[in-house]
Length: 149
Length: 149
Figure (tube, chains in turn cyan, green):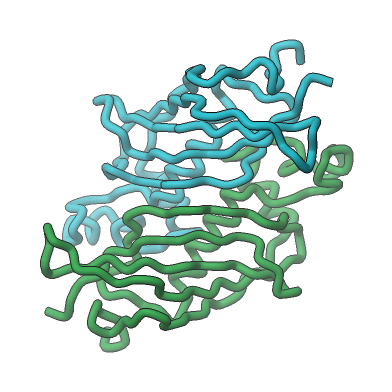
Protein backbone atom coordinates (compact mmCIF):
# COMPACT_ATOMS: atom_id res chain seq x y z
CA UNK A 1 0.00 0.00 0.00
CA UNK A 2 3.01 2.25 -0.55
CA UNK A 3 1.00 4.58 -2.78
CA UNK A 4 -1.53 5.44 -0.07
CA UNK A 5 -1.45 9.04 1.08
CA UNK A 6 -1.14 10.22 4.66
CA UNK A 7 -1.88 13.69 5.99
CA UNK A 8 1.74 14.71 5.40
CA UNK A 9 1.41 13.86 1.70
CA UNK A 10 -1.48 16.27 1.09
CA UNK A 11 -1.27 20.02 0.44
CA UNK A 12 -3.77 22.82 -0.05
CA UNK A 13 -4.32 23.26 -3.78
CA UNK A 14 -3.51 19.65 -4.68
CA UNK A 15 -5.87 18.36 -7.38
CA UNK A 16 -6.95 14.82 -8.09
CA UNK A 17 -8.96 13.19 -10.86
CA UNK A 18 -11.04 10.05 -10.89
CA UNK A 19 -11.83 7.42 -13.47
CA UNK A 20 -14.98 8.14 -15.49
CA UNK A 21 -18.41 6.52 -15.44
CA UNK A 22 -21.10 6.37 -18.12
CA UNK A 23 -24.70 6.29 -16.94
CA UNK A 24 -27.16 3.83 -18.48
CA UNK A 25 -30.94 4.00 -18.56
CA UNK A 26 -31.08 0.60 -16.82
CA UNK A 27 -28.79 1.78 -14.02
CA UNK A 28 -30.73 5.00 -13.51
CA UNK A 29 -34.03 3.10 -13.30
CA UNK A 30 -32.70 0.30 -11.07
CA UNK A 31 -31.33 2.72 -8.47
CA UNK A 32 -34.47 4.84 -8.52
CA UNK A 33 -36.79 1.86 -8.08
CA UNK A 34 -34.93 1.05 -4.87
CA UNK A 35 -34.29 4.49 -3.46
CA UNK A 36 -36.02 7.31 -5.33
CA UNK A 37 -39.12 5.96 -7.10
CA UNK A 38 -40.40 9.10 -8.81
CA UNK A 39 -41.60 9.09 -12.47
CA UNK A 40 -38.78 11.33 -13.72
CA UNK A 41 -36.28 8.74 -12.43
CA UNK A 42 -38.09 5.44 -13.18
CA UNK A 43 -40.26 5.84 -16.29
CA UNK A 44 -38.79 7.25 -19.54
CA UNK A 45 -42.26 7.90 -21.03
CA UNK A 46 -43.80 9.53 -17.96
CA UNK A 47 -40.58 11.53 -17.48
CA UNK A 48 -41.20 13.32 -20.80
CA UNK A 49 -44.25 14.96 -19.24
CA UNK A 50 -42.36 16.30 -16.21
CA UNK A 51 -40.38 19.52 -15.88
CA UNK A 52 -37.24 17.54 -16.77
CA UNK A 53 -38.53 16.55 -20.24
CA UNK A 54 -37.12 13.03 -19.94
CA UNK A 55 -35.51 10.51 -17.66
CA UNK A 56 -32.86 11.90 -15.29
CA UNK A 57 -30.72 10.18 -12.68
CA UNK A 58 -31.65 10.60 -9.04
CA UNK A 59 -29.24 13.08 -7.49
CA UNK A 60 -28.53 10.41 -4.88
CA UNK A 61 -27.53 7.98 -7.61
CA UNK A 62 -25.08 10.55 -8.97
CA UNK A 63 -23.79 11.02 -5.40
CA UNK A 64 -23.37 7.24 -5.00
CA UNK A 65 -21.50 7.03 -8.31
CA UNK A 66 -19.32 9.92 -7.11
CA UNK A 67 -18.42 7.83 -4.05
CA UNK A 68 -17.32 5.03 -6.37
CA UNK A 69 -15.30 7.45 -8.48
CA UNK A 70 -13.69 8.90 -5.34
CA UNK A 71 -12.25 5.43 -4.68
CA UNK A 72 -11.09 5.21 -8.30
CA UNK A 73 -9.08 8.41 -8.16
CA UNK A 74 -5.40 9.18 -7.80
CA UNK A 75 -6.09 10.41 -4.24
CA UNK A 76 -5.79 7.14 -2.32
CA UNK A 77 -6.05 7.96 1.37
CA UNK A 78 -4.45 5.60 3.89
CA UNK A 79 -7.11 3.71 5.82
CA UNK A 80 -9.84 4.51 3.30
CA UNK A 81 -12.03 7.40 2.28
CA UNK A 82 -13.81 8.27 5.52
CA UNK A 83 -16.16 11.23 5.21
CA UNK A 84 -16.88 13.29 8.31
CA UNK A 85 -19.50 15.41 6.60
CA UNK A 86 -20.40 17.20 3.40
CA UNK A 87 -21.33 20.83 2.72
CA UNK A 88 -23.08 22.49 -0.18
CA UNK A 89 -24.25 19.54 -2.25
CA UNK A 90 -25.50 20.90 -5.59
CA UNK A 91 -26.83 19.26 -8.72
CA UNK A 92 -26.52 22.15 -11.21
CA UNK A 93 -27.56 20.06 -14.23
CA UNK A 94 -29.38 16.77 -14.60
CA UNK A 95 -27.55 13.57 -15.55
CA UNK A 96 -29.14 11.52 -18.33
CA UNK A 97 -28.48 8.08 -19.76
CA UNK A 98 -25.35 8.16 -21.91
CA UNK A 99 -23.71 10.94 -19.93
CA UNK A 100 -20.15 10.23 -18.83
CA UNK A 101 -18.93 11.90 -15.66
CA UNK A 102 -15.56 12.31 -14.01
CA UNK A 103 -14.82 13.67 -10.55
CA UNK A 104 -12.16 16.25 -9.84
CA UNK A 105 -11.11 17.27 -6.36
CA UNK A 106 -9.11 20.17 -4.98
CA UNK A 107 -7.86 20.41 -1.41
CA UNK A 108 -9.18 23.59 0.23
CA UNK A 109 -7.95 23.23 3.79
CA UNK A 110 -5.98 20.88 6.04
CA UNK A 111 -6.25 21.07 9.80
CA UNK A 112 -5.12 18.86 12.68
CA UNK A 113 -7.62 17.02 14.82
CA UNK A 114 -7.41 18.25 18.42
CA UNK A 115 -9.17 15.21 19.83
CA UNK A 116 -7.11 12.73 17.76
CA UNK A 117 -3.60 14.15 17.20
CA UNK A 118 -2.76 11.20 14.92
CA UNK A 119 -5.38 12.38 12.40
CA UNK A 120 -6.33 15.49 10.51
CA UNK A 121 -9.34 16.80 8.62
CA UNK A 122 -8.96 17.60 4.94
CA UNK A 123 -11.61 19.71 3.24
CA UNK A 124 -11.94 18.99 -0.47
CA UNK A 125 -14.05 20.66 -3.16
CA UNK A 126 -15.31 17.95 -5.47
CA UNK A 127 -16.95 18.55 -8.83
CA UNK A 128 -18.36 15.93 -11.17
CA UNK A 129 -18.45 17.09 -14.79
CA UNK A 130 -20.14 15.52 -17.79
CA UNK A 131 -18.62 14.90 -21.22
CA UNK A 132 -19.33 18.56 -22.13
CA UNK A 133 -17.37 19.77 -19.11
CA UNK A 134 -20.53 20.95 -17.35
CA UNK A 135 -20.78 20.48 -13.60
CA UNK A 136 -23.54 18.01 -12.65
CA UNK A 137 -22.65 17.57 -8.96
CA UNK A 138 -20.52 19.57 -6.58
CA UNK A 139 -19.86 19.34 -2.89
CA UNK A 140 -17.31 20.14 -0.22
CA UNK A 141 -16.30 17.01 1.68
CA UNK A 142 -14.39 16.72 4.95
CA UNK A 143 -12.18 13.63 5.06
CA UNK A 144 -10.62 11.98 8.09
CA UNK A 145 -6.98 11.32 7.24
CA UNK A 146 -4.32 9.63 9.40
CA UNK A 147 -0.84 11.00 9.93
CA UNK A 148 2.02 8.75 8.86
CA UNK A 149 2.65 6.30 11.73
CA UNK B 1 -53.70 13.50 -5.53
CA UNK B 2 -55.75 15.67 -3.18
CA UNK B 3 -53.36 15.03 -0.30
CA UNK B 4 -50.35 16.52 -2.07
CA UNK B 5 -49.01 19.68 -0.51
CA UNK B 6 -48.39 22.95 -2.30
CA UNK B 7 -46.30 25.87 -1.09
CA UNK B 8 -49.38 27.43 0.54
CA UNK B 9 -49.87 24.28 2.63
CA UNK B 10 -46.44 24.47 4.27
CA UNK B 11 -45.41 26.58 7.27
CA UNK B 12 -42.19 27.24 9.15
CA UNK B 13 -42.04 24.85 12.09
CA UNK B 14 -44.16 22.15 10.48
CA UNK B 15 -42.82 18.68 11.28
CA UNK B 16 -43.14 15.49 9.29
CA UNK B 17 -42.23 11.88 9.96
CA UNK B 18 -41.42 9.05 7.60
CA UNK B 19 -41.96 5.33 7.62
CA UNK B 20 -39.08 3.36 9.15
CA UNK B 21 -36.47 1.14 7.55
CA UNK B 22 -34.40 -1.69 9.04
CA UNK B 23 -30.91 -2.22 7.61
CA UNK B 24 -29.72 -5.73 6.76
CA UNK B 25 -26.17 -6.98 6.40
CA UNK B 26 -26.98 -8.12 2.85
CA UNK B 27 -28.32 -4.69 1.89
CA UNK B 28 -25.32 -2.90 3.40
CA UNK B 29 -22.89 -5.16 1.51
CA UNK B 30 -24.79 -5.07 -1.80
CA UNK B 31 -24.86 -1.27 -1.90
CA UNK B 32 -21.21 -1.00 -0.90
CA UNK B 33 -20.03 -3.48 -3.53
CA UNK B 34 -21.60 -1.24 -6.16
CA UNK B 35 -20.80 2.19 -4.81
CA UNK B 36 -18.47 2.22 -1.81
CA UNK B 37 -16.32 -0.93 -1.84
CA UNK B 38 -14.26 -0.44 1.32
CA UNK B 39 -13.68 -3.28 3.83
CA UNK B 40 -15.69 -1.65 6.64
CA UNK B 41 -18.73 -1.64 4.30
CA UNK B 42 -18.30 -4.95 2.42
CA UNK B 43 -16.59 -7.51 4.67
CA UNK B 44 -17.91 -8.22 8.20
CA UNK B 45 -14.67 -9.98 9.22
CA UNK B 46 -12.24 -7.41 7.85
CA UNK B 47 -14.46 -4.65 9.28
CA UNK B 48 -13.71 -5.90 12.82
CA UNK B 49 -10.11 -4.83 12.32
CA UNK B 50 -10.98 -1.26 11.26
CA UNK B 51 -11.65 1.77 13.44
CA UNK B 52 -15.37 0.95 13.21
CA UNK B 53 -15.00 -2.45 14.92
CA UNK B 54 -17.48 -4.10 12.57
CA UNK B 55 -19.55 -3.68 9.44
CA UNK B 56 -21.18 -0.26 8.99
CA UNK B 57 -23.40 1.08 6.24
CA UNK B 58 -21.88 3.45 3.71
CA UNK B 59 -23.03 6.96 4.53
CA UNK B 60 -24.26 7.19 0.95
CA UNK B 61 -26.42 4.11 1.50
CA UNK B 62 -27.97 5.76 4.53
CA UNK B 63 -28.51 8.89 2.41
CA UNK B 64 -30.15 6.81 -0.34
CA UNK B 65 -32.43 5.13 2.22
CA UNK B 66 -33.27 8.59 3.57
CA UNK B 67 -34.41 9.56 0.06
CA UNK B 68 -36.73 6.55 0.05
CA UNK B 69 -38.05 7.46 3.49
CA UNK B 70 -38.59 11.06 2.36
CA UNK B 71 -41.05 9.70 -0.22
CA UNK B 72 -42.71 7.56 2.46
CA UNK B 73 -43.44 10.46 4.76
CA UNK B 74 -46.51 12.49 5.53
CA UNK B 75 -44.96 15.44 3.64
CA UNK B 76 -46.12 14.65 0.10
CA UNK B 77 -45.08 17.56 -2.09
CA UNK B 78 -47.04 18.24 -5.28
CA UNK B 79 -44.96 17.33 -8.34
CA UNK B 80 -42.52 15.26 -6.34
CA UNK B 81 -39.61 15.71 -3.97
CA UNK B 82 -37.21 17.81 -6.03
CA UNK B 83 -34.04 18.75 -4.17
CA UNK B 84 -32.21 21.92 -5.19
CA UNK B 85 -29.29 21.27 -2.89
CA UNK B 86 -28.28 19.99 0.52
CA UNK B 87 -26.21 21.59 3.29
CA UNK B 88 -24.44 20.18 6.32
CA UNK B 89 -24.66 16.46 5.70
CA UNK B 90 -23.48 14.70 8.87
CA UNK B 91 -23.28 11.07 9.90
CA UNK B 92 -22.90 11.44 13.69
CA UNK B 93 -23.08 7.69 14.37
CA UNK B 94 -22.60 4.62 12.20
CA UNK B 95 -25.54 2.52 11.04
CA UNK B 96 -25.18 -1.23 11.50
CA UNK B 97 -27.19 -4.23 10.35
CA UNK B 98 -30.36 -4.52 12.43
CA UNK B 99 -30.63 -0.78 13.04
CA UNK B 100 -34.03 0.72 12.26
CA UNK B 101 -34.13 4.35 11.21
CA UNK B 102 -36.87 6.90 10.75
CA UNK B 103 -36.60 10.35 9.21
CA UNK B 104 -38.07 13.45 10.77
CA UNK B 105 -38.21 16.81 9.05
CA UNK B 106 -38.84 20.34 10.24
CA UNK B 107 -39.42 23.31 7.96
CA UNK B 108 -36.85 26.04 8.68
CA UNK B 109 -37.63 28.61 6.00
CA UNK B 110 -39.95 29.24 3.07
CA UNK B 111 -39.12 31.76 0.40
CA UNK B 112 -40.56 32.61 -3.01
CA UNK B 113 -38.60 31.94 -6.18
CA UNK B 114 -37.87 35.22 -7.97
CA UNK B 115 -37.11 33.52 -11.28
CA UNK B 116 -40.18 31.24 -11.11
CA UNK B 117 -42.99 33.03 -9.26
CA UNK B 118 -45.12 29.86 -9.43
CA UNK B 119 -42.64 28.06 -7.16
CA UNK B 120 -40.91 28.51 -3.84
CA UNK B 121 -37.93 27.08 -2.01
CA UNK B 122 -38.52 25.28 1.28
CA UNK B 123 -35.55 24.62 3.56
CA UNK B 124 -36.01 21.56 5.75
CA UNK B 125 -33.84 20.15 8.53
CA UNK B 126 -33.93 16.39 8.26
CA UNK B 127 -32.69 13.99 10.90
CA UNK B 128 -32.63 10.20 10.68
CA UNK B 129 -32.63 8.53 14.08
CA UNK B 130 -32.05 4.92 14.99
CA UNK B 131 -34.15 2.78 17.34
CA UNK B 132 -32.35 4.33 20.34
CA UNK B 133 -33.31 7.82 19.19
CA UNK B 134 -29.71 8.66 18.24
CA UNK B 135 -29.13 10.76 15.13
CA UNK B 136 -27.32 8.79 12.42
CA UNK B 137 -27.77 11.25 9.54
CA UNK B 138 -28.71 14.90 9.42
CA UNK B 139 -28.88 17.44 6.64
CA UNK B 140 -30.60 20.63 5.57
CA UNK B 141 -32.38 20.16 2.25
CA UNK B 142 -33.80 22.82 -0.06
CA UNK B 143 -36.90 21.62 -1.90
CA UNK B 144 -38.50 23.09 -5.01
CA UNK B 145 -42.23 23.36 -4.29
CA UNK B 146 -44.99 24.60 -6.63
CA UNK B 147 -47.66 27.07 -5.62
CA UNK B 148 -51.25 25.87 -5.90
CA UNK B 149 -52.29 26.36 -9.56
